[in-house]
Image 1 (tube, helix red, strand yellow):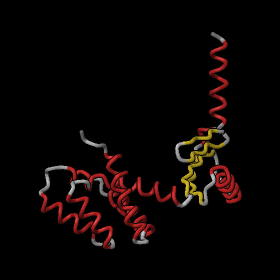
Image 2 (tube, rainbow, N blue to C red; image 1 turned 120 degrees about the vertical axis):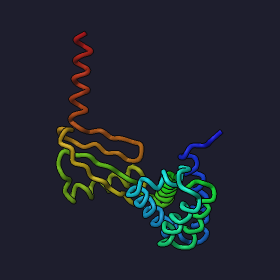
Image 3 (cartoon, helix red, strand yellow; image 1 turned 90 degrees about the horizontal axis):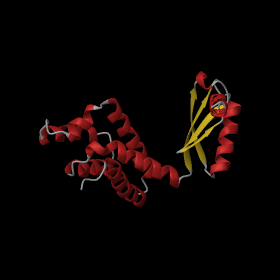
Length: 183
């Protein structure tokens, strides 16, 4: 039975995380993985090249040599191991799992806030403070989205939790309630 890319990502990232922790290079590996995610995003054919059979092993190895150049020894060895095991097509999942583990261990949370207008710096600081207290985290990385279609209020996404305080949600709830009562 084949395992999913998500499971591959979790397994390999866990091993990499443990080795990086032993070598006191968690931050360096984090930055390397973020760079690799960017490289893969900007070159979507990399996944196809490493996963497919249309390119010879020698050609793939040449691509790998170029890919490894900017990184330190640990990351270079890790990439070589992934190449030997035909797992370079799982880089995105490995990076995501590593980043999630790093964030969890360091009290960092990714937050997306959607509002109808741009938030002021004072509103941002207040929002970060509330989220730090409510979710017991040390750092909030805030991504802001302006979406006038929500009419008013805000939608806050913290991990897999969504706090929807938009006027659109309230409007839709009232509309559905009225439609049910009129039947």
